[in-house]
Image (cartoon, rainbow, N blue to C red; front, side, top):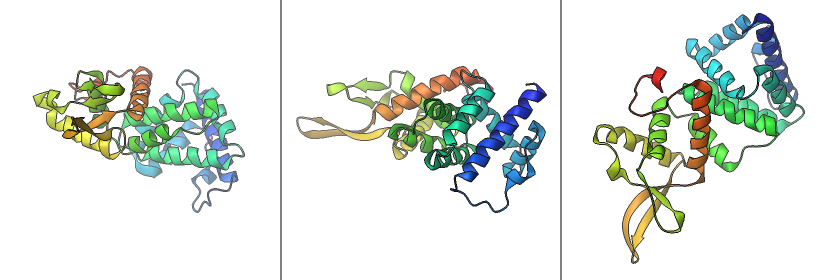
Amino acid sequence: MKKDSVNKIAEQMKEIFEEIKGCGIIEYGANLLEFGLPQYTILIETVKQLGGMADQIKLNCIIKGLSEGKNVETRMNELYTYVKNNKEHAFLVSDSFRKMMLSNSTIACCIMGIMLGDFAAENRNPTQYEAIIMRALSTFNDYDIIYFNEIMHNSYIIEIEKGTKYIDCSKFPDDKKEEFMLTLDYCNNNRIFKLGTIYNDGCVIADVSTVDKVAEVLLKYINRARTQMGYEIHAKEEKNKNL
């Protein structure tokens, strides 16, 4: 990226955060923005203060997500317009950046960046499904996303009456069953999957995890992140570079 473009992006980010500050939702103590962000190197130094080298990687993934389908400067302009004189949007953007920078997953950072870009481009609030996904992604690690993706793309999902889909744990591969079960429990606890019950003639057969709108929306965002980051997300690959 050229220096002039980086300077422009840094200035746009400063304007966005200044607009959030101007909405009155935050009273700054030690205000990092007072140092100014005239170029990318200063931006990186500020990020280092927030947590070290890992934050630089997260920031790159966030920017990749935000810039999906558009250049970064255009997306930053949309983000600025989105928060301008709107306290609700200002809170959403600041809270989203907090979630992304505290995330345990580079993939999650990219996905949340894509989602935030959608909200800004469409000038809308997140749906309830998206709000659930954003919260879950802030605590997911890369393997949670990898194994979720594997579960959703394979023959582990069975459709029963009235279009209800449930996950058949008996079909999980033996060599990954423990990892898949951990992911399943985590998704249940974070409302990505729903807990349900299978009945036969009024008798309970089994308690199961069911797939509904939240899981389907998350899968669509994962597919977009795969394209944006050039990842092949597959449970059989355990190195991040091959996701």
